[in-house]
Image 1 (cartoon, rainbow, N blue to C red):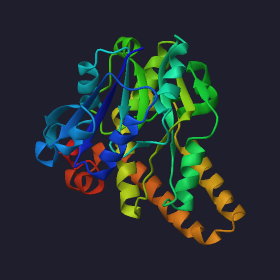
Image 2 (tube, rainbow, N blue to C red):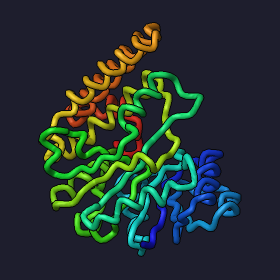
Image 3 (tube, rainbow, N blue to C red):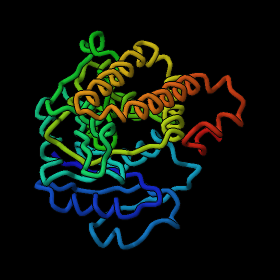
Image 4 (cartoon, rainbow, N blue to C red):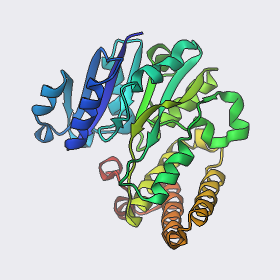
Length: 301
């Protein structure tokens, strides 16, 4: 199988260098690396000295989670394309060989990688990653939606591989969208009878330590995405899964003797929930409030 990598970038820095150097050590190397960079003034030629990459520059007002990756997918002529973000770095040299091994099954449309933290991460963020990205593979299909709910569609373009033929059969990434282009594609391929595979041995280091306001804003965008594509997301509930994560995290902190982190968990979980609820009603809010609450302001403008 041939494969390409698609990386949207914005104000790239040392994290992109780490990613490109991580690609260099892989046992399986891509045929092409397509970078869709937002605002040419932030691009540095030194990135191209690490690895040969094909760069396309767009304006900030043109960026869209679905449309930008759709542009990259259109450029790719390989059997597989891998979407990554600039702040994800391979954990070892077998990221792509393990990720692409899922396609030995011809019914697999998407495989996505495990996200891990490093030693700098806090306990809550570390457990959240372990909760969402466990150490065992999982094959998901349409039959799992009833038992798994929204988790059946869970997928992340932080590092996810797509079979180009099935991707095109599903109509490509939706656009415009402020969020969730990956989960919406997962939902579409499952509806067509294909599988989504979580590969626990394909590992990247990726996490965020968000502030309260950032949690609120990020989840505002998440809720807005669910509102925009309510014909899909209304079929499942996300509240149940969110509540389970909070409960399990609290129990984990108690077992670890880190009860002093419980207030942080409560406040951050509250910020997520309130942000999400506001986001689900974004089209009923004054434009000024939407622009104040959202994370991706250019999208809502």
